[in-house]
Length: 320
Image (cartoon, rainbow, N blue to C red; front, side, top):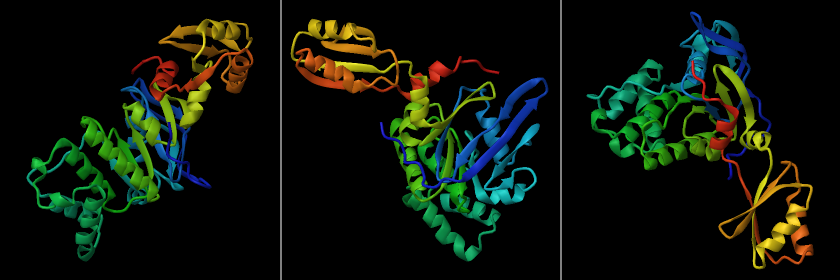
């Protein structure tokens, strides 16, 4: 599957250095060293209690680290908290809305909080509503909006001051499939506009196609951080090929089982499922062996390991 392109000439938007947070005897975050580059659409993956929300709240300046430090665009989140708050937009997994307010009143209020001049606020509110697809809801009461529309309104709120970095904690939580697709499309557009986005989510299939880089965290410790394809390659013990022929499958099976690169050959659904011993094995060798052996090859497809399967392999499901 395709992923969002990595930005050219990346430089750090977020860096953490041995970042730790404890609550009494419980360690929520343990020596986290993380780098998110400018322009990344970065997926932050972990089970409930893994430390994702704690990390995002520290980056948003709502929590102070017990040890270590974090920087956003070169600013320390503790020492330069005021500067950091103007650079970021933080959307928690659950956020309150004033249901008796109109959509434009709600956004105008937050625009005032960020000291956007009154003469500019109307256009700013109009622009962010257009960006999240809520222009037609300007005069609506927030309480009358669907769950998906309220989530988009929450995103509009964090965009009101044009932050460079978005910290989104489960932004698609509780949304129906259509609303999730719409939310993901908005995030892709924001990345194209040059925003850096960190998104935590349990919907791993969507992060797989949405994000260019991911981090996996469990029990407060970083397990992996890097390109989406990198974690799949790192965890794949052997490539799996599905082979279709127009000749006898038994002949193809016999040819392949004799090869040192092949770990296992099975017949399934009228095809051959071939597991190679090494992820670095050359797939073209398999095709060459079959053709030279007289097998009429119709199709050869490599099975791609999904992010969900990778996540299950690298984590134990432990929570704090």
